[in-house]
Length: 489
RNA sequence: GGCGACGUGGCCGAGCGGUUAGGCACGGGUCUGCAAAACCCUUUACGGGAGUUCGAAUCUCCCCGUCGCCUCCA
Image (tube, rainbow, N blue to C red; front, side, top):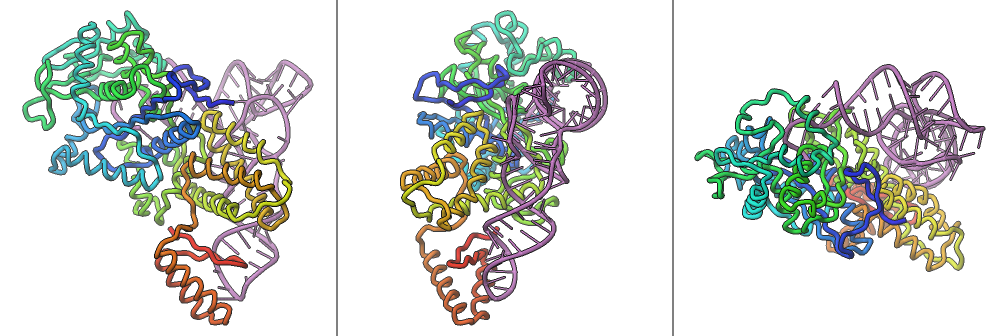
């Protein structure tokens, strides 16, 4: 079985075949950097991190582009809202770029903690104004947009004459009209569903650029079209993002690509892949509902719904235990359950590394390995893949007790599969610390002293070492024949 | 109102016509100087109704309920 991905465009799983093997172009909508990264950012990042890692594992040469939106993303209805970045800058009395850089840094910090790999290219919207202007000019030349008072809007009605509109979201213009409310300040637009490619800036506007239509700034949707196509060409292989971006953002991107390049754009991307959202008590996290939880709050435990700090890996595992296209309902209980599961699995993995081979095998590794990759190939079914590993935890313990055996080759393949899938593809960090360092050497000395104390029945000293280490965040795990340790969260 | 997703054992969560998914929690036990951890054992579920089928959690229809999108959101 080869990798299959669910394509939002076709509403079914399709075999993944790159347009230009071995190269794969992957574009994912990154954060709008006007606030602290939250659970939703983590879900999307982890989802596409796994896809990125798996594609690389399969031998593809992946160019992974994930943008930073630092201009153009408006608040509120229609296109009359305030730019999110600018609003934050005004409220906090900062330069817009100061806001963007602060929250970009926090985003990176949180992603690093989650062991999310940096993309190959992380372009900013403000860094690609010329590309956006060029694209808008071309759309105008081709007649799919119009200029009003220094702003440029995409002419959906004109577009519909040549291309189907709404193919990604399944929406019809008539339905949009029926469902749309009375929106204010749309006098400039010919139709309510036209959207802005470029907006005229008032003199007081903090971020503005020269353009053929006067001073202004780009609309939200154009940045992703311009940057993805700039770095990946058109069409490219995979465009990803959160499910809530399907409409209008991604629909607009497809429209812009066709308007700019014609039918050759082929929906801009071959595959459109969307991760589902994180809910809190069954409801979507959103600013308006005021129920969103930031990653810093999860990691620090400083949130009314949380009683203690939580390890980033617990969150990563929580997401991996669900399929990426189903919602994950976040709760501290679920997070702690995921953490325990993660500890159990990774502890077994590290036990596996200590197993010695036998002269014969009592179990067939290869078919199991096949099943693991079949699960991943099946639209990244990480939950099913993890279950296959859990099923082998007991086997590892029997291997270690010499009640089961694997030949050197089988054992190597078994260990390799654990490493490849859990560490390389799913991005789970090991629990126990085994690297050589001053810290480790010091700690090992303490463990040796404690072992000696226990042998001499000097339990007061042994417990003192254990308790003081616990205070420093190191939890000791006493096994019959050895003592291991892990970071207590 | 339109479009879409989903309802699985205490909780989370796979499942795509026929095997115990798996995890967490609870309970019992083993190990341990104590504690923690670890390990062993244990609990058979699929919103309701009708239909198709030898056989349905899995397909069809109806009903009930939850959620998402249609406005910014990952």
